[in-house]
Length: 335
Image (tube, rainbow, N blue to C red; front, top):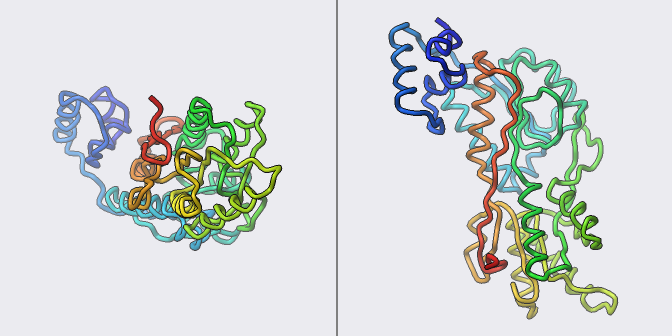
């Protein structure tokens, strides 16, 4: 008896049966449906396979970038946790994979790809792989199972709220990241989705984009603040009254330095960042931040890959995990 046959008897999708078998805590079905599936599983004598499927995780990011960026670090750790829970053995984690590494993908049961890769690289990996899921990359490749966040929608929401709050001198502190091609080399700079959203939004509202390209640490945030303070001395430069920071660490360094130099946050300038780390609330002013649940991203990605390997996935699945705005001192919620 297969998962597909059980699904047909229970009048549900194979994916639902697979998630019941694997005791997926995020599955939301009625008690009656769950009992019907479990009863059929018991009557048919279905036995869950105990052999572990071997997969590989490919990252288009350096180990240094992941270690500096809590978002990607948390995402990777959660993926490893859910792999263990779903009987998937991570045979290898490959950073900035090259042609040699990509050529070996067909020897494993599945591949989890954490972007950003070029479209050509994604197509090649997908063609070689037995099962394939693209994680946290908004590149559009037809018929590709994908899990991503709604960075674009939530960035637009913050920018619109800035305008409602009469803040129309808006800067973006953060920078581009590198897109990796199928040879494992930098192909070109990929503008982060949040940054590209900011840029397009600025053009739409006939505002001049003001982008301060820095790294990802608190020290980088301090440098960005000092850069803004130096420019403030120029008579032809208008200091921002709204700032989006690429992550919380940048925002912490930025806000602390501005506050030390008599710039009032949020009255003079409001600041919003991403990740909702502990650093947002360790001191005043606390930081308004976007929480993207890496736990849910990881769970959905591993589940998609597992269901492909089990042949219980139907069609192409694109899952968007929404973020939440956690309002604090640096940009209070507009009443």
